[in-house]
Image (cartoon, rainbow, N blue to C red; front, side, top):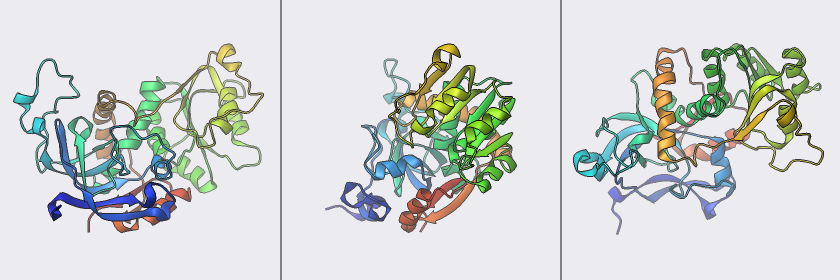
Length: 360
């Protein structure tokens, strides 16, 4: 029989998948046990992401190593160490890969935040030390929980995949989404000649320009359409050097048309679908030498994610601490209000992170 120390509260889904109303607090979820290079973290807060909605509905390819519990970003305190973590000298060997060995510097009681393959919608999570970051005192639990997935994804799209260089232009679709909020700030700091964004309301357009510093943002509901407005803003024919898109099918042709010569398009999602209609003109791939690349973060191995984590720690974290970069929190929900949190994300009204606090 399981004791109270063997179980925890976690968000579960009635029937394994379903609408937001299918979410509930399962107080009998087995508490994870850290092994190898993992530590056990008692979660203080976790962030919501669009993939959570898809996974809840059974429409997201969950990595094999992920637990069934939702959630990929969190903040909290280390409560226990895995076997390798508690004895680095005996567990490390020259034949072991670096990602299989525990990372030094983490101990019980440390305040941390980080990225996981899943399991963050819970009181406890077992996670690799290679996916953890020490939490600076200047960041609240809630703000720290809203950083890993969004800022690492934005870094991946802009630098690792997009190869962005100072003096170039960039367009972030879904400008008021958490990833693009991070991306617009990263682009400005990286020396972009212009940073453009699209958004779904005038309020979000004003947010992108006024709060984030986008050169120009465009409401994609406008009668004239965002594509024509972007073209006009880029002197008619020059186009945009780097386009980062989450929408997919319905934006595909416009993205190709707007890409500059030798431009790049980074595809992070396909919210409008993946199947293109007949008549799509792909000549830009040849005539403008446009490069198109899709990418994900969650399916990557620990070594790849650790590399991005290190980029975040070196480049973005100091600016997040001193305020040059900002984490925008739209709303903080209680653990018990997870249904309302998911429904709010589904409303597409947010401008910033949606966070759930795990404190009772």
